[in-house]
Length: 94
Ligand SMILES: [Zn+2]
Image (spheres, rainbow, N blue to C red):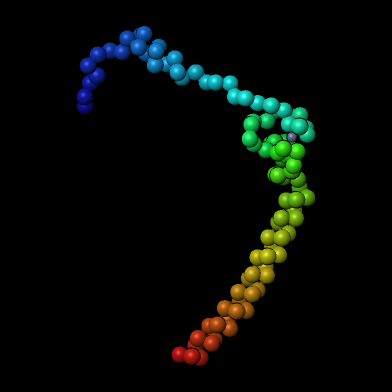
């Protein structure tokens, strides 16, 4: 293993570390619920972005889940029906 040729001086180390400080992030308050939010992101407490609900709300979540389950059921039933028919047809043709 190679060894560094010279010890880093205090000043050199401190100069390097002068760029490592954390900067304070810009934050504003939500227009709806007034909780602190990060810029260009939806509010984590109410799910609003630019006065419009984009995330959350238990009703919307439940609706989405209902839609998904309904769709998956329909797709499954259709696939099973068609798939079975296709397989039978293929077997007959061979
Ligand atoms: Zn909010």
